[in-house]
Image 1 (tube, rainbow over the protein chains, first blue to last red):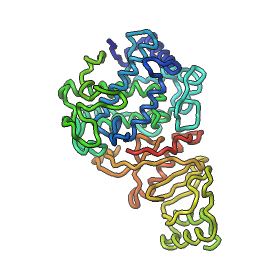
Image 2: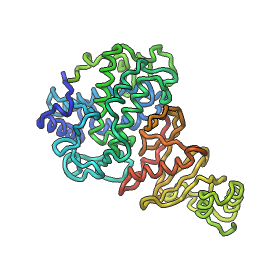
Image 3: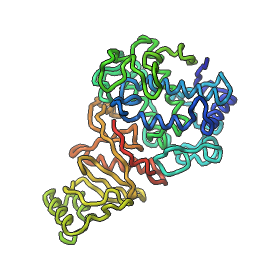
Image 4: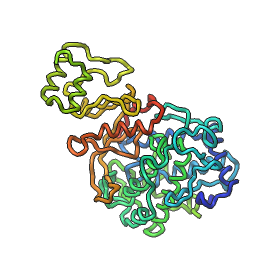
Length: 268
Length: 156
């Protein structure tokens, strides 16, 4: 049972265990996957796939897709490290604590991560980068600011999970407002590879999405756990509540991932 | 205009110094007078003349990189950076202005590089949108070039 902690609550040992497990998964396959499998899925499922469904982004399944994606990564990190207590940490970007420190995700935030954690010499390699470089790129704060606590409060106050036309144009939608105003904005705030299609090259991707998942869980705790929309099973172009999400396979539906206590983790 | 090369046409077009009609004539004239520069050249994937030049098109240098944008080429906008192609994808999306003005739905363009930051491109208020997108991508690239994968098309 993983307890996902804030980066502000992590010990140095926990930070080291997390970064080492990420590095191990880069070069080791467990449960039929390695780290680059996750980058492949992110690139592939950003687009509409052959079923004409947008599984991962700009659609209602944005939240449950990433919840399942992170559950698998957490499992793989536990397997590769042999540490059943290993957890994905979350980065509450409204606070002042930064994950970009020498003892965690690396301290360089204005260009190439050329030394320290997550540099090539430390053992981190890029995969499918659309920027021709072997160095992870970050440009923190150069093209966008962080969402404020007031923005988060505003997003969390939306009562409708999602509604037709179920895409990136919906205004009265917790999912779309959260995806655009919180999720997209932090990708742009970090910049560099986080701004790209292959964003999981930067390990901070997971800390960001863990916070997004935590916010969805808080929203569910207030609005209802079983509140995913659409529910009918016949909505064209989107994943309905009981429809499987690719590539996760049979049974991995939005409904199946609605309750995190059944998925084996919690938020501290 | 007989000796005008494509770059000049683009430059004048971008500056609004020729009318759209003149630009069309110039484009056709060039197309028949000489083989399209760069046609079939893998280093110049946008090579070849457009049938219709758009006054918003540009071919210039920004922060040491050559950025070249063509509007509505074969029905879509196209961009190269240092002659490397960046695939652009059109999405309809909500925009939430940072200045607190009301959100609105518009058409934005994303790419592998500005994947979470759609840029509006049109012929009125956002007529400089493609140039803005190009500059944004140059900033993300820093000292580096686009990789081949950035040219891959993807739908949304």
